[in-house]
Image 1: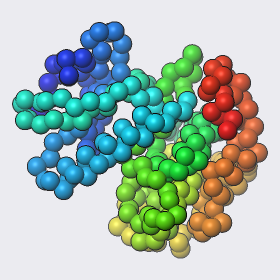
Image 2: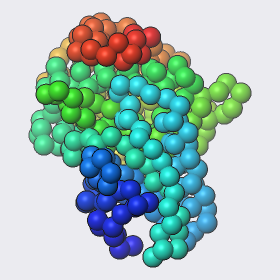
Image 3: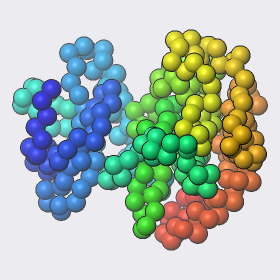
Length: 297
């Protein structure tokens, strides 16, 4: 596919340059022709395979439905969505418009840090993500693809705020339905995702991986590229690096409990002393009363 950079999309947005690419779409920095403000614009990719397109349509639809109905200070802000006719491809792609984030996502920030992000900064971003996940879980949804590259950083005042993005894998967590589909990124999978029914606690496990990665620039378990990595997890021992302080080690070990019954849910995570104290600081930093109310729930 040859992108028509700067060619208007839906006669409303000019694509300035590409920001990234996923399985089903490309994300561009785009400018609204009317208000001249910049946004992130995700445009669906065309596949000739009908099954792939069906999956793509389902993921775009799921994301739009969720973002239209749910708003949180640490979930990427949804602006609008639409379809337009791409004459060159004879295709009507889905498009989703979001607030503009920093060009560097959390993965980029960790990689340039070399040895990892300082614990104080990591705890703030970790807590912001946990608050958003708790809100999602309370509304009956699980994300299922929490990973570094799906955490965007948005400039607010003079600091960067972590926000969850990419909701194509979102699913309602209902007791009457089994959750066995392995959608998401394998290296962030929990042990129970090997053909078993799972719950929103898979997001809690992913947060344990994410926190460890933030602090060390390394994955906590070996052989993550192996095909049977998830199957072997149950036999892997978690050994935290000595550079991680004891309270953070204990938090990571709690999150990476292999038995999902013993693993905490997100509401319990928010009551962890480290996290609870950081929530109070975050609430003080947010002046908007509506946002404060959302966080406090």
